[in-house]
Length: 484
Image (cartoon, rainbow, N blue to C red; front, side, top):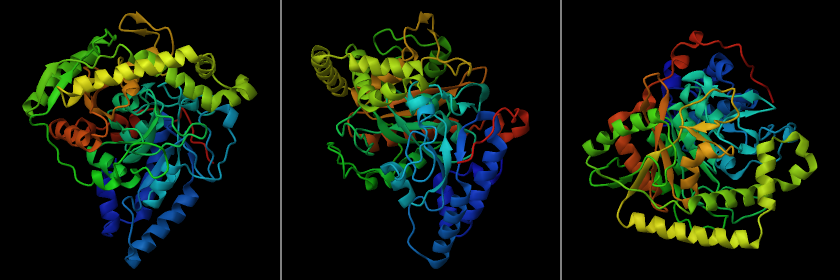
């Protein structure tokens, strides 16, 4: 693992601006890492190296001229394949979109480019981002850098894998039911789901859609804050957000006096594997050592399953019903099931869902009248066999749907709160485990400060997988990168 690939995004962009390192050198190192490591994990599925080299040359010329540069100046970055990228194949992991080449960047991609990020390709996703295990019929399965026979999580599994393996420092993702938090936990990195509208996520058929979020992944909280500086600010969507990029400009790591309510079962008996709880329980002392005030307590999540299940189904039907009707034979059964559930919702179901969401919000505000943070497991299971479609048994409880093992993340999605997944250590067998830290609405900047306070005392993300340290230790001929 060379020095460049160990750098954070903040460090890398500072070196490029100071001319200690050129954008072309950073890009060459990034491309070499893809070629050396990606065969073992199948995370980068489409490449755009020729255009990237042109952008890197332009970045170096701008540096030489002393031009004003963006926050992400010269930073190589692959993008999640659920985002549209102008002129570059964007499949969403579906055979139905296998040849789709958009004419326009999605808003988040455009903002990253404006900030100076250099697009180098796309990372793998489950089909239409459905499910938190990254596999599809177009590109195959993405696996975990810490255990290449295990799942990397999803839907931002490709992003998590490239960051964990040191292919890149910073990445973009999205999260409806844990798609930033679960892969972050599985891959020992950080995933941040912001408050509604802080980073606009366009929805062509419903501008008021609130459940899904755009957000970053990185190995440091400082890099998460850098991404937020470059992308935050809602000028186009009908949201109540008032946060802007400058609100994330200064980190002040601190947990002293922070009131934390924690729960391992979310107060409603959510099944969680004992090894996950064992690792997390051992970390409670870290929060206490930092001066936090801990108490076992939970948000009342009794209405969250109904809210998440029905709003997700409504969004799936809104966005994908036409495509499923036209090309359903090409689309996986889990997506078809979720779309049908949405189409079957009637007026009574929607009225009940809105009432449940109202009760849930009252429960949220009751909790935050007493606590600053809610602390919980990011996942219910450890990284599982990558050949599975999804875990059918969770700590002795039989799963009924492909979403059941993701419930730890889905419950918090239903609250609409900002949530950050933080590495919390490893099992005895070396598998990563992660926390979720959730703050009240629009306390995003404070949440990053609290997460940074925990990071200062632990820094688990600095522990690289053996794959990154010694690529020859893992068979790297299993998959091949696919060019655009």
